[in-house]
Length: 376
Length: 88
Image (cartoon, rainbow over all chains, first blue to last red; front, side, top):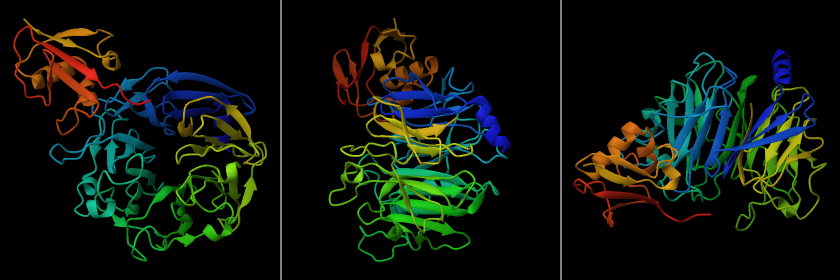
């Protein structure tokens, strides 16, 4: 509740990362009215902008342009001023690998202020211990003798490049990490990234010839519940899954979704206080994978029982002929009560709900293709 | 005499919007290193971590395209950095 009150006092800011720059939407105290500002980094491709919850003032941006190489910009004053990283994520010289872009940013454990993790395309894992000024590769992953087997080649993966994403840190143990890769699957480390093992039992990979592969899966988004860190959820290329540790077998929740909608999508958002409540945004993954709202009727689906059943939440959303979808970083929730849920679309709209998805309102439109939304 | 380096628009945030800067060095690699000393970060935007010129970047020395950073330079040479016209 104290966290909720603090968030209410400072008012929420949505960090809207797009293909053409960074925008901000600031809410009033009631979250009814939102004011859009920006752009910053106009023309830059912003894959992720994330605020550091540990100090409330540091923001990192993962950027590149169509022509220039990737970099990280850092702000220590909530986006008023920015400084470029002195040493952005880059593979070891001589490795032959080249970072195309930094795709995912995760603030480190609460006991390690200044530590951040970054996932890149192609798949690489990097760490900074100085709030994003300099980055080093985590050799336990990047140089792992099996990395190539886990990931496949750098150039033959998802349409916008193979990605390492969903870098998750156990709030009870700074050394306990999870990562996910498209493709490659989910992997776990118990020693701060020195060693890794696959964690994909029970997850389908129906695009592979083998029936039950150890790795090679395509998780789209994996979330760990901060208040119940033994509970993980996964939105996968092949459905929706839940994992309750110490089990290492994911439970397939896909059958509970309506058949006409399916269980394919990219984002997944967890309720900040209730480990049984989560939201997904399904997309059309039939035939050639149109990657649009099924039937042109966008809807969020919410479960309040850990994925056993789902309710359609579309009040306020377009009823037909709306063909956008939502990327894996472009949906999030705030920490207020009731929780606010927000998503950004491939058509440049920001939608928000201040009542846990029961009703939706368009907060901003006409922006570029939205890649990520985070709450600051 | 130093070498003239022509800076394309997307990189001028590093050079305080200067379109032409002077640099000294015996090779293209040395020029790029000197630019990075003066304008930190500029190198990695145009040269990747394996030392290769990035895909959409071209270097011309006195109007002749350089395929890598090895070409030797002489006083009064002109180095032109170009961002390819592509994308949308």
